[in-house]
Length: 211
Image (tube, rainbow, N blue to C red; front, side, top):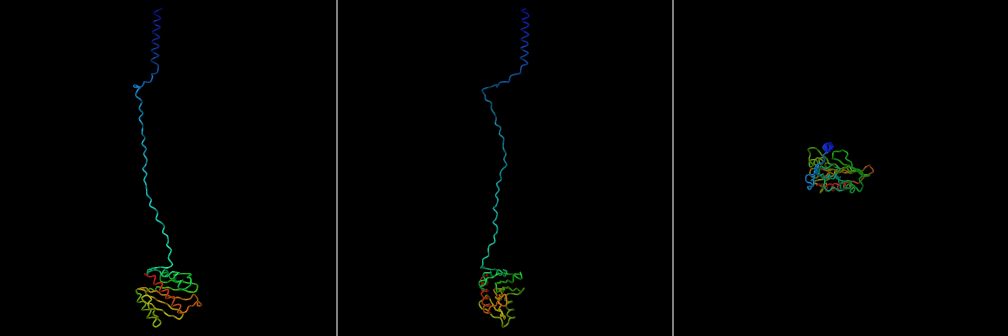
């Protein structure tokens, strides 16, 4: 009986040893529990695209048209005829409002100012190869005794006296200006002296604008 008990004890030990071998292993403990676990921070680099500052130049202001003055102080000799005298200039001398200004030939040699009853024709005669002095000499030769000199106006000036009206020609330097004033209709007539006075006043005004 004692021997049987010993055998049972041995079998129980072997069985216990076998169970211990099949049991799952326990996790290993920290070798040094006093040392805290160190967590290494992971830095994620954020790459941001550089911002390029651009400077936009301000837009240039729009060109605005400058209103023309009613009285021109200086007019180049090459200016078109309709810029030599303004509507206000002619209106004041004629004592009538100019209703229309037109350039009938579109070559800068002729301009017409029309009021209700009068028309002023302002011309700058141009002959290729002919100077202003030569032009006036030719006009004088053609008019003969009918040419009436106007002293003290420009470099030289003369009237061409016609039956119903007069034409005033004035030379300044190498440019010649011609003034002719007439009525819109035969009923709109001025005296010859009135025509001459108004044409001379307009010539003096134009000459005062020249450089």
